[in-house]
Structures are given as C-alpha cells and as structure tokens.
Amino acid sequence: MQKIKYIMLHHSAVSHEKNADQFVANNNYHKAQWNFKSSMGYYLGYNYEIAKSGLVRQARRDGEQTAACYQKNMNNGQCVHICLDGNFDIEKPAPEQIYALRDLVKKLVRTYGVIKGNIIFHSAYAPKTCPGKNIDINFVRGLVDQK
Ligand SMILES: [Zn+2]
Image 1 (cartoon, rainbow, N blue to C red):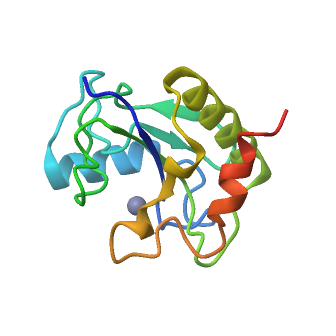
Image 2 (cartoon, rainbow, N blue to C red):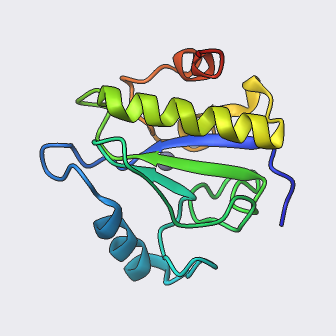
C-alpha cells in the first residue's frame, strides 16, 4: 500500500441520459479492457464511482493499484481515483453527485491528510478533457471547506 497523496477526479464520459448508474457497465468494460482484478473482486479501474443518484460504490481499496491515469505513477496507489457517472463536457453533475463527492473527498482528506492542491483533475495529467469542462477544480477543492 502506498501513502495516499492525491485525489483525482474523472467522469465516465457517458451521459446520464444513456445510463444513470454505470458501475456495472464500466466494471464490465474495464474487465474486457484490462482484466485487472482488485482485492475487492472488481475490475473497475477507479477506486470509487458515483452514480447520478449519488450512490457511491468502491471497487478498489484506498492505496491499491488502479487503472485510471497512466501518467506520473498515478496508478501506483498514491492517488485515490473517483469517477462520476456522466459526460460533463455536455451536461452537469447532478446535485446528489456533488453532495456525495463532497462527503467522500472530505473523508479522504481527513483520513489521509491530502492537501487541497493535490485534489486534481485527470485533464491536468493526460491530454483529455476528463472530468469535463463543466466542472471547475476550484469548486471541487472548495467542497472540502463546506459543512
Ligand atoms: Zn479520467
């Protein structure tokens, strides 16, 4: 297990209209892509996925190897990867997703002492828009200060 220093945000890039709860679909998709099973028995490349309803599911333990970002050793366990279902290049996260994200990020920050500047977007590390142009990094970092 690595010491956790980062929290990275992703989107699934599949719209809420197509599928509001994508955990099973993405788990199957990543199984077909990498067949990389987690200690929890899942194939999803991220640690957590948040459905449109705000339901949070964990697929990999914090500190476990991931298949989420291939740059800068971000898959070696030092980064907890959170994927929000949706395509935030064309839509916005549901309020329930934001509340769930806030609670999860606050818990991770409290548990591992991640500094606010190390809450990051995939797009800062890879040539992608992930997690979409309709989410702002300063907004996400600000969630940590909310009650
Ligand atoms: Zn991503």
